[in-house]
Image 1 (cartoon, rainbow, N blue to C red):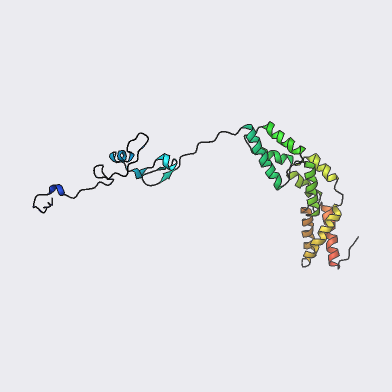
Image 2 (tube, rainbow, N blue to C red):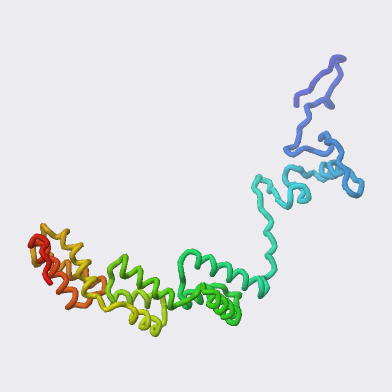
Length: 249
């Protein structure tokens, strides 16, 4: 052991350099400014005396419940689960969701039931009441929806009856409503098929006649025209176009 001699030449073992513990020692630590708690005790002094470094953790009352580990990582306290929704709240949420869907596009009654069925906390009676109210207000109307879809299919897509019927079935419109709507549609599939074939025939100039005919018949069939109408329209349209636009009656 190395001894130190003071100015007076006296043995100075008691003046050995102090060894400071890693986390401090109560006798060596300089206490911070006192912070009194509710009981009037010096909280900082108690922490030092216990050998606990206050940087290891923080007071939940100060940081809102965030606990800090010794490594500095933090963990959020889990928020308590809210109370279950009441029947009125469940119905209001389901109605809001249905109206949001209807603002995007019209729905069939069956599609609306599916939307409401996604709400597990909505009972069948409440769902039926919502559907009835939507029907009374005109928000849900299968007949009007069928008419709207037929208009789009005929005027914009040039579809025939078969394709139209399939499109309405996919929207889960009842069969009797579909049949009633198609009865109102003029029996002009041949004329509409011919109009469509004429627009496509111009795109087949560089294709051999047999290949052009097969392609045009396939396009017409995919749009819901039956075999005889599709074949007749394709032949007439190609003949008209390749003869210089002369139309055959």
